[in-house]
Length: 382
Ligand code: T4K
Image (cartoon, rainbow, N blue to C red):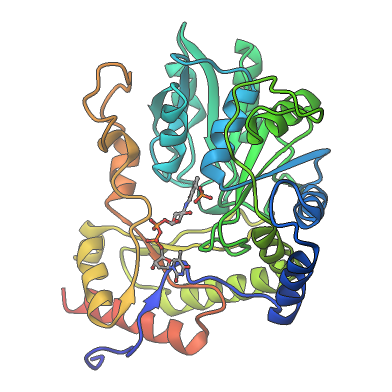
């Protein structure tokens, strides 16, 4: 039986990874010396080049965060207020909110039980006369069915965008995530394994979308400082780019630590009935930035919420990403203009089972062993 409060300090999910501090401070000092702190400065331009290189794309437009990036990408792809966009319900509220905020109408699809990603068959069923785009999400960094969603979009003559907020550094069929669909959007939020404090990037091979996005990110101003579109301030700062560049330099090391952590959790929870560690596709490069367990209450004899409560007692602050499904939250639930045929059974079942556990540089084998022991104890006591 585990002792009371295993950890004196909270063990968080989403603890930021910090790269080489000296290198970061050097970059910050450079920005202060140059007195160039924002508006597409040299660090942002360098970050842009590094992210494009990592994603293997022709263009990268750094932005203030992924939420703004989704909004800008949707508008740059030509979507207009009132257009319906099919999006999975099992995602961060950031995805539908970003769409809703620019006047689009999210239509929620169900997910595949094994991958937690959008079910292409359900997407196909939902495509109707007002559908103007599909937004796939690479949930927990595992790429969604990119080929099938892209084919559907092509058949219907509509764009497909990918919310790649969680999939920095991952591959799909051996190619880096970033170059698929009309555009993909990365997040470099503090809680992501590669972070720029707050930040994001739109990556694309579409010259028109990239140039539109650049203008829209900068209040609609073009290179000649003429206002040519209704823009927004979606710019990244030099301080964010300094952190982003430093973090990117450590990306491989962070990924390796995440991979080892994932393995330690898998070993630590092996054979525990009803508790499954979410897996990435074997043949792909995965960032493992989220370690997610699925607790099947019927088999485990305990609900996910009780496992979370047991962890909280020990100062382990696990997170039920994503619960509830976006179709169950305001402003979407019950709204007549959000045409989601209910229920979404696989999404709803998954939302009751998932729990994200601490990973990244803040934890190691000893912490993970203790977390697994708490979970085993909770299940045994149920
Ligand atoms: N699409 C998807 C699929 C996403 O997952 C997200 C973001 C987006 C789009 C939008 O990307 P951004 O616009 O954010 O670039 C967190 C993140 O804030 C959010 O970025 C992320 N998804 C989501 C999955 O997780 P919260 O509300 O859970 O964050 P919060 O403040 O509760 O922090 C989470 C944990 O991290 C806590 O235990 C505390 C810890 N933490 C957090 C911060 C900020 C730290 O230890 N240090 C820190 O600096 O959303």
